[in-house]
Length: 246
Image 1 (cartoon, rainbow, N blue to C red):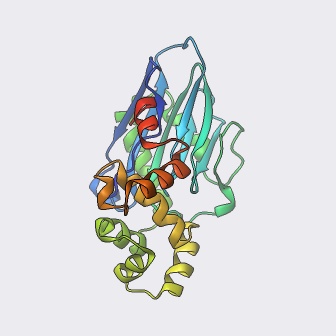
Image 2 (tube, rainbow, N blue to C red; image 1 turned 45 degrees about the horizontal axis):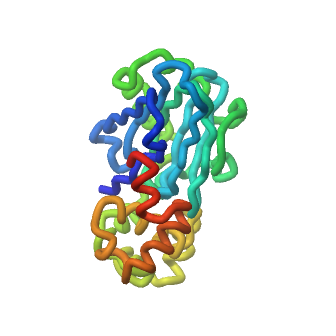
């Protein structure tokens, strides 16, 4: 299944812990992982997170200030998120296309304000703030089950087919063929369920794919790969590898 890379922290950053927990089998068509990122203490310098687009939706919880939470999804380019010198975040990463909540509640930037939406994110953050990730996970799973029962998340057969056959997709035409849809149907359905056009979704998925396999299996040549990679990440592949832990 689709396995997007974690967001980038510069290799020089010390004292930050990132953990992931795999969801229960019953939720694996909805959730990629439950995750946590925190400092061990107060760092000497402020940290900036290089957030990578992956077409996933995240429920994000600030566990130092449990009033702050949000639903995040990046589009087709990275975002630099200033985290400061001490932080503790946790969340739920949903696969592309499974989020059916209000798109107006989804943001593509730093979340630093108290949550004012309809979902019980603050209550979830308060209930999990002091727990290790392994103990947060059952509460996160219960929250996802509640979202599923309310129709806020549900399996997306279209994006599941695309992600399952990602190695075979080189173009939007390939994507439409895998989905058994016309180009027009693909455009309409993807935009409605993910917010992405087929071209933009393919762009993001191919860059994510390049971290897991030889770029020559995905891109026509090195020049095309480098241009696409820099447009999405802000770095050439070599500079990215030298700068960030992936």
